[in-house]
Amino acid sequence: MNEPHPPEHELLLARALAGESDSDLAAQIEGCAVCRERLAALAAVADRLRTSGELQRSVLRDAQQRAGAPGEERVAAVVRPPAPAPARRAPRVWARLAAAALVCALAWLWWHSGTAPSRGDLFLGSEAAGELSPQGTVAEFGTFTWKADLPPGGSFRVSIFDASDTLHTKPLVRSDNLGQPSWTPTPQQLALLPDSIYWEVEVLDAFQQPQDVLPGSASRSR
Ligand SMILES: [Zn+2]
Image 1 (cartoon, rainbow, N blue to C red):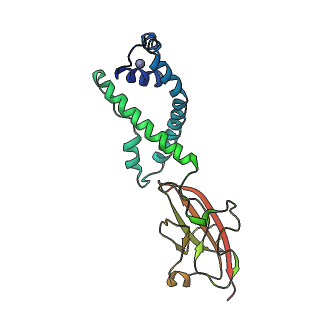
Image 2 (cartoon, protein in one colour):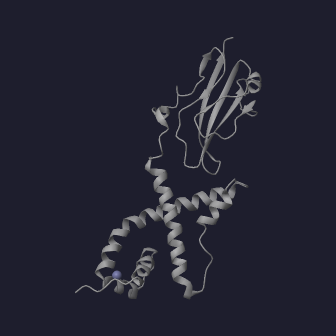
Image 3 (cartoon, rainbow, N blue to C red):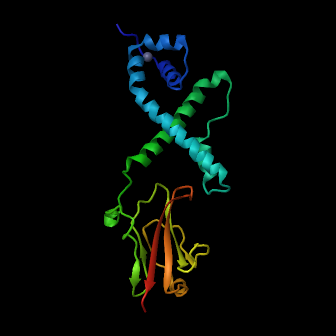
């Protein structure tokens, strides 16, 4: 008794989810049981897509205000909506918009799901203080370690300052981008360090933007 649900109906659903309000569109969806069911089920997903879109726009806005963010053009190419096309090509445009929205939604869900792969027992705690080493008085500086989750596509970067450089204007030593929560400066770099240091770990996202900074202070008692 139910009408069949031809492939063209997916386009109706896409238009409805995009917020198009059209009495003819509404009537067509209302006339198909499968469409009605799917539209109801997709409403929750559409909400998340909208939230994701707001996040995406805010990220893009932020990225555009910062000149030359590495990787910016690659990301923009993916998430920027396609240019307006002639009406007869509407289905392809919709498909691309839907695909872009899906990519964003998946990235957003992944980012918020907290299921980033664990790196063994390095991420057991969540309190910032006490998770950095060296901290306080130590015999000698060597390997620097910390506990923090690595953002998807992100990295860590360590900067070490003279403790007397209270504004942290000029790092004496700075690491490359790191994929693990540990860094050992070279002997030459260690030789540059004074007895008292301030050091920090920047947690960088895929755009090289700091998401968090973990500060530490240490002195050596040689
Ligand atoms: Zn249908």
